[in-house]
Amino acid sequence: MVNPSLQLRLTQKLALAPQLQQAIRLLQLNRIELREHIQELVETNPLLDHDDLAEQTGKDHEEVSLEAEMAETRKSESAQEHSTDDYESETWQADAGMDQWADSPGWSDDFSDRQIADTSSTSLREHLLAQIRLAHFSEIDAEIASAIVYALDDDGFLSDDIAEIRQSLLPEISVGDDEVLAVLHRVQRLEPVGVASRNPGECIWVQLKAQPAGTRGVDLALRLARDYIHLIAANAYEDMLKETGANSEALQQALDLIRSLEPRPGARYDNRQDEYLIPDVFVRLDGDEWITTLSPESNPSLRLNKYYVTLLRKSGGKDAEYLRGRLQEARWLLSSLELRNRTMQKVSQCIVDKQKDFLEEGEIAMKPLILKEVAEEVGVHESTVSRATTQKYMLTPRGIFELKYFFSSHVRTVSGGMVSATATKARIQILIENEPENRPLSDQEISQLLRETGICAARRTVAKYRESLGIGSSSERRRAYRRSIKF
Image 1 (spheres, rainbow, N blue to C red):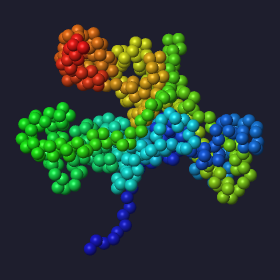
Image 2: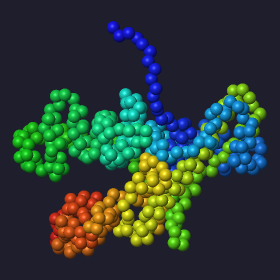
Image 3: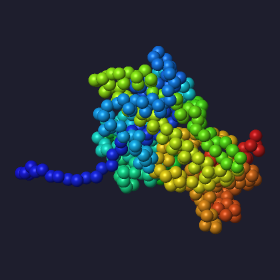
Image 4: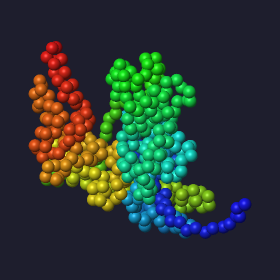
């Protein structure tokens, strides 16, 4: 029998203050989400008003600056608030990382920009985050699962690799690749099953593993999904018979089972419509310098409601306690918005400084850039840069681009230097556009031509970049040329 005992243990734990959590969350939101979130806060907090509505209170219409209002209110508050009112003295450390937020807001009924994108139904992200909150995830595993959900593309596939997921976590969460992979396997079994798969083969395989015991044809279907997914895609029935050694009846049964599954796990949550991209950052040339400015939409006009500020000074008891709490929330929001804009300004300006050759010469002049470089330049954590650039758009003379577009991996050069993957893709596209139509260049020939220009790109690297550009192989291009001749 175990004897009960008392033990004293000392532990160290890093916790984020509520105001810091709010600042991190605001940085995470895109323009539309930010506007909706602020609208919700204005509706629930009487101390907050849109600047154009501030004079509709019917009370004191005297123009008082925000700083004067806040200073005047601080003087009148009781000493009870001093224990919690320490945000003005805190320094916002953006390198504390980005939190993963499960309570993604939905569209409010009176949101004026509803026509921009129809997301009236539950999105895949919201559906998965709700399941994570209800599942028996530990605190750290829930953070990892949320990071995985935020990295999904519109079809429900995981676009980032395991290392990128790990780097996007808060700095105090130190986990290995195996731990992230274990959580990934749990996320893949959420509804819809197969979500967060890294390719269609894995998606089908996960769904097959979730089939009830005794499902006919599941063993052969698992083998096909694991080893011969390319034959299924090509509908190469005879090749599948030869490779698997199965008879026609068993193979047909397995194929029917596979075809009953969903190759795109996010399809039912696909709410994508034509969207109008409104930039968060504008870039202009001022003399010889490229200057970035934030969109006015990124800086909502908010102010404290003067009527309730005056009421706070005159009231007491529970009313004063309630108003003081709402006043604290309003201060945190206004400060967090300022910090969000400051961080986005620094990050976007750093990106422009690093990629000014792209602005002047195009994709072929894109330089390799990673999150770490910008984070070190700005003085924040990598995850902060990642969240500050996700779903944020920059309008440049060359078009509108997501801020993440300017980050690119690199390819080695013959001289030992580096050239960005984007610039390498641009060179590959130029070579293919200028190739003889009756004799398209093979991947090996393109690799050799790139080496002659000083870029070390293996044949498989050329093939990967070519496929990402949506360009077929040399044999496919040759067949397309022959068809055009016959036509």
